[in-house]
Amino acid sequence: MFTGIIEEIGILKRINRASRSFQIEIEASKVLEDVKLGDSIAINGVCLTVTSFNATSFTADVMPETVDHTNLKHLYPGSQVNLERALRIGDRLGGHLVQGHVDAVGTILQKQKLDIAIIYRIQAPVDLLQYIVPKGSIAIDGISLTVVDVFPDSFTISLIPHTAHLTILGKKSPGDSVNLESDIIGRYVKRLMTVKESEKQKELSAGFLAENGFI
Image (cartoon, rainbow, N blue to C red; front, side):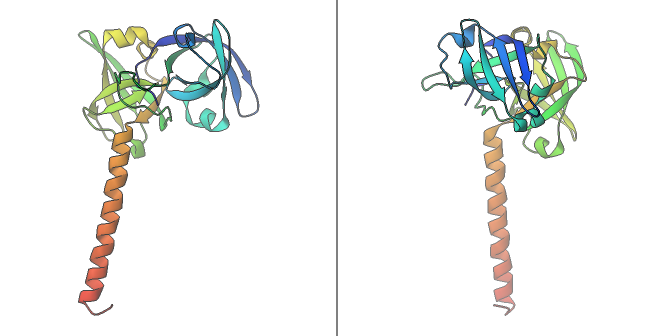
């Protein structure tokens, strides 16, 4: 579990591609301070496991499922990536609860400066938009952000200068891809409402049949 507060920007040093998976080596400093083998580190919002490390970098394996459903497939040596270590008991929850399980890849449609803020409009799949609400939380490339508006095919967020400077999102432009993870609380609420509605329909159906002498 993560918070969506990026600790540093890492640089992809090496990538070893296999047929459908690959191994990456990332140069970093902050996230290596207390790293251990098997630790989880979010890379652009994707939870990956540390398989080896040294004083200046760490490696992680990217499995086929992750390759297919995230923007990590577009990485190349020299790429910058957002990094965050997993949340520990006692840590402050500065953003919101982020699992590191990407729901979909979105595309930046617009990038507009509004005073000191940067407004991004991001295209997202319709089935994901049902979990995105104005003033709600969403993780974009692992960054905890607040949704401004939601449209039939997209949503907008406002990026403050601090976040733009300390993450890779500030460097992205229209046409670039971003990893999206909806708020886990919203997904659970949606699931609960769906189950309750289904149970209600079953009760009504049974009542109707009994009332009309069918059961």
